[in-house]
Image (cartoon, rainbow, N blue to C red; front, side, top):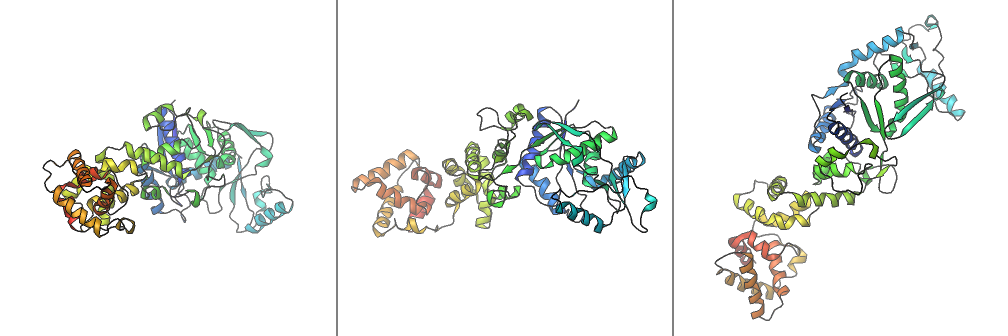
Length: 464
C-alpha cells in the first residue's frame, strides 16, 4: 500500500509555525515511506478565504522546501461530490433533515449551559416525521451518530483513545443552504484522495471521533490518525505572536534559512536520540511517528536563532553573498557594482561566524560595499581624535608602498609602524578599524584590509 498524506490548510489566514510543522511532518512521513504528499486547500468558507492567503501558504511551503505531489487540490471544487455523499447517507437512513430554527438552537445551548453541560443538539428531529416540519423552513441535514457504546481510535501518537458516543451529538453535514460542512467534506476528500495517514494537531482529536463515525457509516476504510501535541510558547502558555507565532514569511524576512527552520520545527515534538543538527536527508531517513512525543513542545526563539547561525556558517561563501545581495542592493538603492561584489566575496568568510541571521549578515557586511565617505558610528568616532587621524594618514603613506597586498605583509607593516612609534597595536588597530568599517567590531582588521583591497583601503584612510 502506498502511503499518502496531506496538508489541508484553511486559507483564511497565513501559514504559521504550527501549520508549517504539520506540513513538515506529513511531508517527511510520506517521503520516508516513498509515498505521496498532497496539498489540499480547504476553501469552503468562501467569505473568509482569500487569494492572498492561498498564495502565502503555497509560497511559504515552497520556501520551506516542502514540495507537494501534483497540483494543489481545492476543496470547493468537490462540493457536488460532498453533497452527493450526504444524500446517500440520507437515503440510507444514516442522516435526517432537521428543521430547527436558529432561535430553537440558541435556546438549546442556553439550557445546556444553565445545567453546566456542553452545548449540544438534543436530537429532536432524529426520529420525527418531516411532515411535521413548519412551512417555509429549509432543513439542515444531520448525521445519525451512534447513541450506544464508544468510538475507539488507535492513534499513532496518542495511542488508544475513545469517547462515549453519548457525548457526541448529531452533527450537521449539509447546511440549510445546501452547502456541505467541514466534517463531511474532509472525510469525503480524504477518502477520494486515498489518504492513508492523517497527521495533524491534537486540537482535531474530537473531530477525529466524529469523522471516524462517518467513515464507518459509509463503509469506507479509515485512515490512521496521528494527533500531534500543539506548540506552546517558551513559558508553557498558548502560542502567540509574542512567542513567535508569526507567518512563515515573517521568518524569511527576519533572515532565517529554510534549512534551519525545517530542522528546528522537526525537533519541536520529535526526537532521534540526542541529535540536534539533522539535515533533510537524515530527517527523511529517520522520521517516523513513534518518535513524536505526547507532551506539548515549547517554542524557543533563541534556540532557533542559534540553529540558524549554524546553518548560516555552513553556507558556501557564494551562497551567502547571493542571499544577502538583494538586501544590500535595497540599502544602496542600486545593484552592486562588480567591485562591490568582489569585496563582498572576499570578506564574507570572516563575517558568517559573527551573524545568526541573514539580516545580521547583511548589516555586518554593509561596510564592504558602503559608498565613500563611509558613515562612522558614534562609538567608533571616539577612536578618531586628531592624533589617531595623523597616525592613520602616516600609515596610509607607508601602506602605499606594499607591493604584495596580502594579510601577512599588511600585518607585518602595521606592527612595525606601531613599534616604531612605541604604540601598542590596539592604539593603531582600533582607529584603523573605525576608519575602514565605521564600527568598533569587525573581523580581523588585516582580513578586512585584504578584502577591501589597496585602493579602497587607502581611499578610506585619506577620507578622514
